Amino acid sequence: MRDIIIGTAGHIDHGKTTLVEFLTGKNTDTLPEEKKRGLTIDIGFSCLQLGNNRVGIIDVPGHEKFIKNMAAGTSSIDYLILTIACDDGVMPQTIEHLNIASILGVKNGIVVLTKKDLIDQERLINLKREVVEFLKGSFLENSQIVEVSFKDPSSFENLKNILSQEIKNIKIDLDKNKKFRLDIDRVFSVKGFGTVVTGTSKNSAVTIGDKLLLYPQMKEIVVKGIENHNNKVSTLEAGNRCALNINGVDAKEIHRGNILAEKDSLFISDRIDCSFFLLPNSNPVKNNQRIHLNIGTTEVIGRIKIFGNDIAFPNETTFIQIELEKSLVCNKGDRGLIRNFSPVITIGGIEILNPLGKKVKRKDHNYLENLKNLNSNRKDKQIESIVKNSDDLFLTSEKISLLLGEKIISPLNIENIISIEEKYYIYIDNLTALRNKVLEDLKIYHEKNRLALGINTAEIKSRYFKEIPNNIYQSFLKLLIEENLIKTEKNFISLLEFQPKLNKEEKKLKDQIFSIYKSFGFKPQNINKVAENFNNLDNFKTIHQFMVDNNFIIYLGEETYILKGFFLEAKKILISYLQKNPKITLGDFSKLLNSNRKISLLLLEKFDEEKITKRIDNYRILLSKGDGFND
Image (cartoon, rainbow, N blue to C red):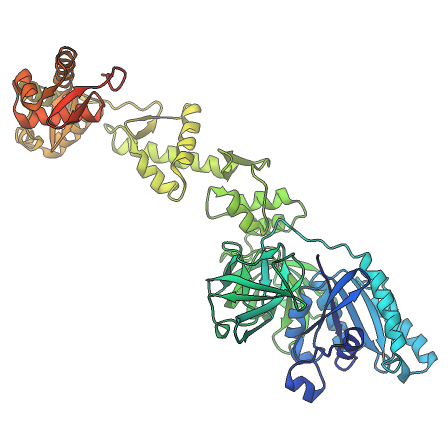
């Protein structure tokens, strides 16, 4: 069952912790310093049964010095209880806490006026008017306003009844397309059990035995035990408070802000692209301004780079890049608080659009357009932008899911995205650009090597398809072949219209080489011996390779070549003999050709390779017809 997570918020000493204690019977101030000072420093946790619903309650600190802890608690709540003390009214942290909850996506809540007994009825009526005015434009604008007194326990029973009705109407928007994630807010060691971490589970369920990764340490852990509000469970759905007993890492190595998540589900980045909303009552933000960023349970410092402008103005959304002073574990869609560097106050909020920001100029129009598409409400626009602007030309559905921050269903059917075997995707313009690059490479190669067959297919793969499976590469080549742009021969790629052509001098040299090999017959010599007949070795090598590429001569191995005619004749003699005899030895074959044992062995090994013969012990047999009888 999915718990509703309620969070308290409000100014220091406005009764948040006491309110939670009245509701649950538990004091969430657990630190000795909290008990001593009488204020909540860190986030506290408890639970409550409201009708048929179990509710987890997060009590967050109100003091301005501990806003980062408040942000950590608020990042995972569904419903906000905003406390306002009747004797104080709306105070600075009241405003800031409401802003934080709004920035982090909280959409439901209630206002509780505490310490009702400290003011008279007239002041209470005026205070309610002030609160209604204060809430205008916020997600609490139409929420209920309930007053309680710590001297009147029945007022809390009334609050419980109201909360019970309220949470029935809360629609929990769990995105099951996302992978499990736990932003760690506490870590400790339990004797006899080991390391325990706590947080609010997100996105999908966790089960005992699951293997997860601790970010940013990148250490694999195994879930040994799960507790939800002191109840041991084997599986826990997303959206619940939980304590996970894990092994594989010591408690001393883990800190608040670390994250447990599935492998390959998060990024570690020091440069993030975001949409940025500056609160209405904030001062304008200048380019390169230093800020505090709070995401989940993490706080980092960074500098803002504003795209397209020099200043971000209040009550407006702009696109920014944050250059972080320390790497951040994050993903697309993560929300965070932006707080001024000094004085440290909340000035706005961000949503990460691209966790792997690139170092670009602020006036880069194409980059800005990409961010606008990533900020679109249309998922197809976001995916198109990811595929279009990725450093990898070809993306798997898994990689797209990672960059999108949620699972996608393959195959994709999105305009401008080309699917190759429904496994890899490429943006249509990127495919055109890649095709043009390959064609241009071939054109340049042909100009410099007019007698070569073309570029080796392995070289093109290494150049543009290094991490891509060969079948995807072959599909790309097939596409170019079907478009009548290229042809392939002997593992070489060339432009369709390309034909190697010899000039007069080159033809003469080819004829000379041909004559020499013809004179050898079935007793060809090493290529180095052939080369001794020519003064210009470079020209010899070029024409000799041309003759190999075009099947005038056949390579046997050990730097030895034979004229194609003699090769085919040797094959014919061998097949004819084996059609009349069950087997043939090396000596028999040498006699048939009137050749030496070395050349005869090279020929037989070549025929074995072509599946014409098969070696058994010291003789060979003829394989069945259809296995390599092509000339």
